[in-house]
Length: 174
Image 1: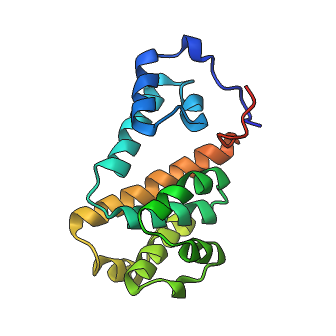
Image 2: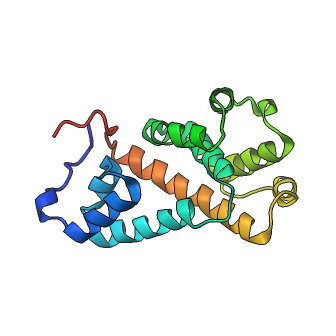
């Protein structure tokens, strides 16, 4: 159960709710909770839409790091929300299992570099030069910026979800 109640949607900004539903397919509990602060919700929607839908970063890479962040941060909501997305963009079920068991050898050299970069950012914030150099070989400057922003953004997502204990969308009782 969430630590604070979800807001009264009848009093929420209807236009903002419409944009969330248009972009996400429905009003997820995450966005419902964000509606307590319309300015934060608006910025969140814009930022995460840019990360997920306007980035040049390959969708498979994006979903690998999102799934890895969910594992490292024990953010089950994030993990379950992104599992079908990850599969739809080419992440295999065996790769998803490998993310959970820290079996980086199950991945290509490029994927291992990405996952080590993700782990360094998530666990330690600072990225050692050798990890950055390894990931640098696989991405353009734009892709590196977008990869780094994706890791940062989804660490924010998992921390928000877990701190407020936001209910899985199929578990919330109205």
